[in-house]
Length: 327
Image 1 (cartoon, one colour):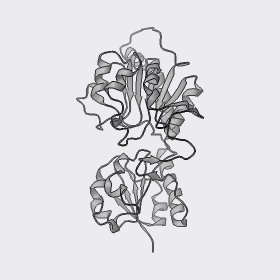
Image 2 (tube, helix red, strand yellow):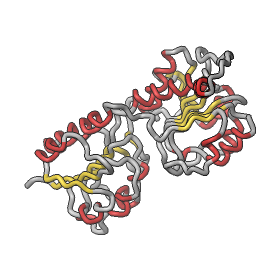
Image 3 (cartoon, rainbow, N blue to C red):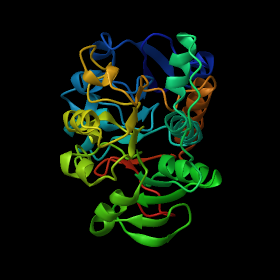
């Protein structure tokens, strides 16, 4: 008997629909339709990366819940609700492998934009003003990448390649990491913050990381440093960040993710000098959709053949555990 695959989508359906339909009895559901279509599904492909719809639609009867949920995103925080996490028979996988290099390139672009004040240059161009001025170097500048998963590692490798001095921050301190060199734990994190010209957030949002960049952490950062967040908005106390930016203690920030998305129009972050805002697009590219469906189709082939799935999320930790590197 063919399995029942429910594809949750918003806007456009994923590519390769004919391939999906050849593998399973495929049903496409919007977020509004999901409560009626999810019960009895064997597999859920979530083509929406942040949504409350899955939690709100999850069947009360665990026998009617899907046995496998695939997130077409790297972050899975919106999937980690008790009914899914606590059911040992439900496997959660994600799109690890798609977003690493695009996000690293985006971070490099943000650092260059901040260091070279490209927003200021574009504003002067708009006003037809000829305003020569010096810009900051990035070679030799110090970067602390907070989050040592695959996205953080890709960021570290690319920033090292352009001559920046990179270290990491993670759960397990070490001095011999192949990508970061030094990974700071709790004991040395504050001293690392005082030395970093850029702090890049690339951690998943979990109970342990929510609000980790709070007022004391921001106060510990080097005066004139810049914060870049391509992880999750919930990592940062946004009110405290606004205060530190307004005081001039931090030189700026590049923010791709926010506590509330879309970022409300009344947020003071929109108009703060030295702040770049993007709409959660750090990992998006023109080839993203094909790459995402490729990961799922590869996993579905493994699923049908009884082979181990790739990118299985540790539902207690909230991310894929990589045995080759310590987080």
